Amino acid sequence: MYRKHHNGQLSIEAFHLPFGGTLDPDNRWVIFSSLMPWEELEETYAPQFSPTTGAPAKSVRLAFGALFIKQRLGLSDEETVEQIRENAYMQYFLGFAGYTSKSPFDPSMMVHFRKRFSEDDLKRINELIAERGKAMVIEAVSSRQDDDHPDDPSVDAGTQISIDDFVKPADWPEDKNWGTLTIDASCTPADITYPTDLKLLNEARESTERIIDDLRSQHPDLRKHKPRYDRGRARAAFLNVAKQKKPRRRKTKAAIRRQLDYLQRNLDAIDALIASGASLSGLKTHWWKKLLVISELHRQQTILLYSKTRSMPDRIVNLIQRHVRPIARGKARAAFEFGAKISVSVRNGFAFLHRISWDPYNESEDLISQAKKYKREHGCYPERICADRIYINTKNRNFCTRNNIRLSGKRLGRPPKDPGVNAVHKQQLSADQRKRNEVEGVFGSGKRKYSLQLIMARLPQGAETTISMAFLVMCAEKILRLLRLFFVAIYSWFLCVTTSWLALGGAKKHLPV
Image (cartoon, rainbow, N blue to C red; front, side, top):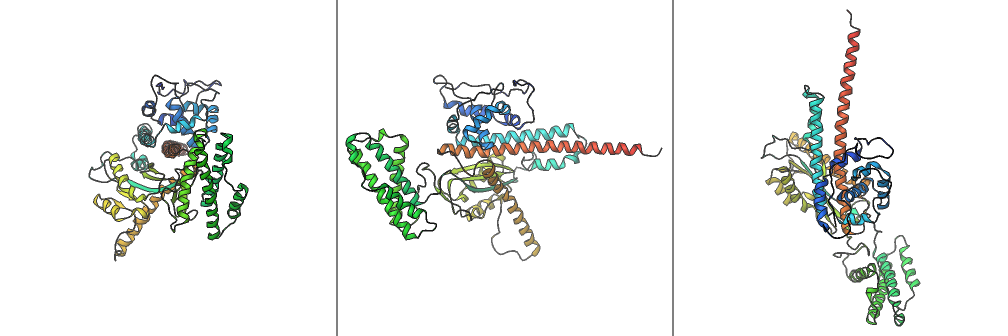
């Protein structure tokens, strides 16, 4: 069951510290606590539980906050619990009434926390955080204008330009497009070994051997059902090819055929054991689910061995994470990556996750839907869309032309003969390409700083939650940087005014009477 909690922000003075003192109001976790939409999160979280029966569930603030801390710091589940136990600011962020040295929950609860927030819920929360953050930034700028320099409009010109970059002006014409939309797609690799056909078949053979041993142990009469081949020799046949740096295709194909033969014998032995009275219900859930994947792997590899094609729909690349598919990337480092393919949009400086798919798809299909979503949020289409070459097709060009959107990329037809017009077009193309680097920077920071380079969650829903949380954390970090930027601007202006005033006072002292 779930008991609703009071999500009102506890004051810093009311937070109990056993060693005395108070928390710093400028700490990042204190700012994050005021940025999160806790009430909206609880509306999504509470309906998953019964209001009257069952043990009380952990609060939404504790569950979501723990995922946020884990993603922001790139920690494991165990280390996340330890960091929360040791850090008073994190406990304040999670809604504790005071500091405690006890562990707030068991690390295994992180698996359940990831299941309780869907991809759509986190997308909506990300939008709410962005809107609340923009309001906080505008409030900080307006307070600066009122308190520091109300009579000098020229001092705030640079700040107003930066605000207009991500907030639509109130007097903007309704029939005119506004803003910039930058889109691109990438892959978030899963935590699996690099798959090869031979390696997968060897792993499947060893797994079926384990299943056969477990089934044979259920009854003494079942011990006679055992494939008649030497297991050590089967592994040696695999290692003889796998250890070679660049084995010939003919030798690899022969090794695959041999492993398929061993695997077929094992599957036949399992069928004979079941027919003789063995029960798959005696196995752990992990093993009989793995057996289903192995049966499909055997079918796929048999087709690939005796056909000329090398492609296979829903191709299995891992026996545990069977939802993972190969994603063609065409990069210099790796032609294929194995994980979820994501489509991302950067709307006026803020990155949002648009789509997660475990199957490969053409990302150019997302341009129109992302532009329509931009219009629903801002009331107009973007002034320009900066995208990769794959997005610039006939369908997307016609859509952008109908809606007066400038799509980045080379123009159709021959270049103009006027060198001045041609130079302007080239300059515009170069500016759009520089702007498109913004989404590449999002991918770079997400993979290097927010754990998108290697998704450790094994369950598909947990992996999707991890990916969505990464973009939510990036949005919150963007707002935190903007708030600190304006604080530094205020301090710089104050320091500049103070220095000028002191210099002017010193000059007056040395004036002749």
